[in-house]
Image 1 (spheres, rainbow, N blue to C red):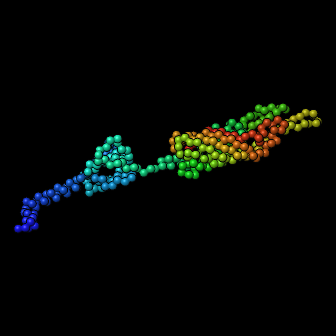
Image 2 (tube, helix red, strand yellow):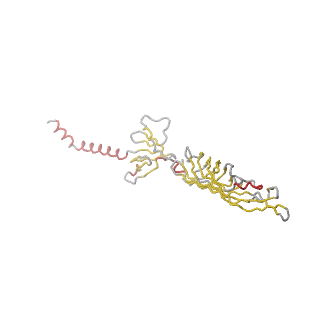
Length: 301
């Protein structure tokens, strides 16, 4: 009897058949119950069968129910996975010492968290606002960023400046009322060299300074009938315009809370108050540099 015939006859015997089927069953059970161990960062451990690992999530089936649903967990919540082969895969942060079968940690995709945190608009209120008109004033400021890093912004401040020197100036003939108010605006561009999506950032930029309002204007007249001089005070429309450079510091303790300080210095080019220095009017600003300073609190969105 040749070898092939002997082998066929041997496999037909009942004992060999049972042994062969038993071996197949054991191998199948081993394959079916092969499992991985998933370790979460909160200390929880699960026996699972991992089906997929991607850059954001990990998919798996529970070891006790491989035909059941697929579960998905955030990759950031998982510390490591110990696979059935003995290899270990760490996530986000690899420990100092790892076993010889450990896999190198996978690099997570980079995300620009600043762009998610900081909005492109800033609306703020200035309780402290100083201008050429007075050290007393209020302001509302709006800023809009053009780019993702917040390097370039449109800046539009609106300011109400109040001078309260009521009847406090003696012009040589009598006390005059110098109380007045002016509206200012300084629209322009802000440039943040390092971007504005930081807790502390510096900005600089040009703006157009525009001021308009009324100021008291006093003239002294002579009465030939009585031989006395007398003063007449009238309100005069005033307009100024020039170029200014603003330097600002933004402080953002949170993505939405905004604190800012700013100082600007400029040169006036257009004005209509040259004659206000006549007859004791001491507020000729046509040759005085334009200045402004403010402290503001606001909301970034």
